[in-house]
Amino acid sequence: MSASHATSNPYAAQAAGWRPPPLIGSRALRWALLLGGLAWFVAALVTMEINWARAAEGWQRGARFLAAFVPPDFVSKWDDIAEGLLESVMMTVVSTVLGLVLSVPVAVGAARNLAPRPVYLLCRAVLVVSRTFQEVLIAILFVAMFGFGPLAGTLTLAFATIGFVGKLLAEDIEATDPAQLEAMRATGGSWLQGLAWGILPQVKPRLLGLSLYRVDINFRESAVLGIVGAGGIGATLNTSLDRYEFDTAAAILLLIILIVMACEYASGVIRRAAL
Amino acid sequence: MSANTEARTQDVVWRRRTPMGDLLAWGAWLAIVLATVLSFRQISDATIWDFVWDAPQQGADLLSRAVPPRWSYASVLWKPLWDTVNMATLGTLLAVILGIPVAVLAARNTTPSVLLVRPLALFVIVASRSINSLIWALVLVVIIGPGPLAGTLAIALRSVGFIGKLLYEAIEEIDPVQVEAVEATGATRAQVLSWGILPQVAPAIAGIGVFRWDINIREATVLGLVGAGGIGLQLEGSVATLAWPQVSVILLLILATVVVSEWVSARVRKAIT
Image (tube, rainbow over the protein chains, first blue to last red):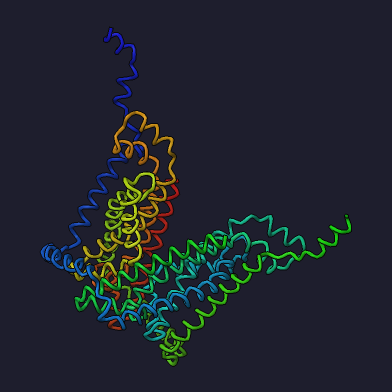
């Protein structure tokens, strides 16, 4: 009875042996990718020239670093910390505003549905350059040009903002409904009026979201620019780490995390209030 | 009657916001302008403006020194470039491996405890995201010594938060029906995770990973500045010795690498979705 039951259900055996279909259909390609990946992995590890003895020593120092977080030392270097943080915040404010003011025209120029071909190519080139180079690289050049201090950092962040907001906003402009712009033109509206009433209302939520997100990024980036002399909290942090003052470094890191969290919370509130 | 309504509609002035809303909007704009002006004045006080007016000349000077690039210098750069790409790739792999459990713990529908575990996982994500990879590198160079290992770990530590955040949002958006179906067969938690949830977010994992890899290539190019390996070390050396023709070679090489990685990343993401 039971034997005939098993034979009467041939699907059971088949189901037990079922495997999900592989991601890559061709078996040869699958093996080639796997072996290639393994070969790269080994080569990467071997050529890294890791000093394991030095890294092993790190456990102690790592433990000391973590221990410095309880309690962090806000007091002994407070003046430096406060000054650095305030400078970071001011750089964030000015660079975001400046960057946004500049990125809107670049975004309009980089939108295929609004700009003539030469303008489009020029604006796209600006965006590519701005997005390719890490902020710190730009900061090095700007420090060489404008001298040490927060202005170099502010301009760096503003330039990076153009690349970020410009690209994403341009994509949003290209995705707008053309009917609204056409309606504006049909009423005899000028190009600027078309922009203001046909395009802006459609991209406004995205623009607000990007701006708020960029405030966040600019603050986080402003914390590293000090390493190359472009102002902000980074210089203080770098010095404290160089002098093995881990408790001060811990205090700075915690403050950065707190401010970023506050920014994220505030941007959530603003987004809900404005939209 | 009809005259009455007509009079009333004429009296109504259309307004976009309530008076309170108007006041708030004005207040917000005023606050932004004030903050910007005050901040700019502070920054301006900390600036030596003579240097700034000099900037176009300085820029032109730099450019004239940087051109033509010293192409022979590129032969020294292949190994640091290889290190840079490896740091970014290994760091991203490590971050994906670490980020998946963090995301599972942070997602509302998979976390073991909304009250205890979820806030902890969210804090890990925020902490990781708040600290720039260059700062992670600074810390790690002090702890485990200079070299690409510090750079790889710095990339990984910064990326865990990024991957964790995007992935937990993806997990929260999955279709609960599939999970329920697997649960109904009497599957354990681990089985539900691997058969009900993982297949749904696998494309997201790959997409987020490749997206972050692209960003990490960019970030890895500067980690050498603080001694964490990669091409940044050569850049630092060249800038410090004012060898601008070498700087331009390095920047062009970085440009090429980033453009290629961006292209690869875009292709892979397009293939996935």
